[in-house]
Image (cartoon, rainbow, N blue to C red; front, side, top):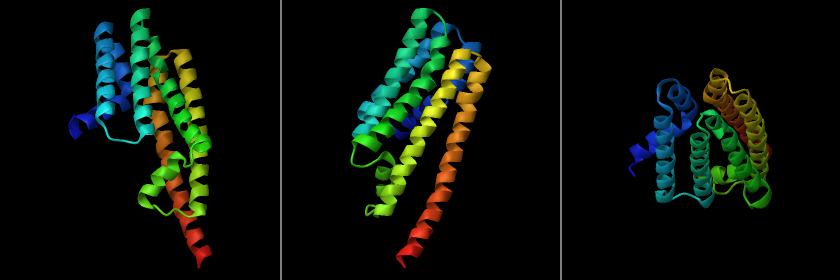
Length: 194
């Protein structure tokens, strides 16, 4: 699969809430389910051809399997309410991946990412990456809880607003805030080393 096709597929998966919102509004139910099943299949195909870390493949495979499951469940029920649970399960998978790396692996997810740029991470950097991984665990639990509430209420506009916009904005704020904090921590540790 070409990089462009992979990029487009990742965008489609990221735009899931908007796709569901407009699909429910403007497509026959069967077409929408067929499209979601095709996206899940392509995602599984893309995952099998990618050369990534085992955790990345497992996470991508789990998310594709969840998309497949919620699509099939909605098709069997004959309504779209099952589709609203995809963000909930995505947050659970991300929480599980981050928490597993924090408690059951020698390096946390964030430490592995940090070591790409800085292979010789100092002990203070390792401690910092563990804290950041913990913060992401909390984020995924809270975000998943709100996603659960929006799925239970089943108000499509509210669900789309939170899962298709607000949750992404919150992720962006967390990423930007972590970047600012990381720069301050690096400056402080550089001064301590002098």
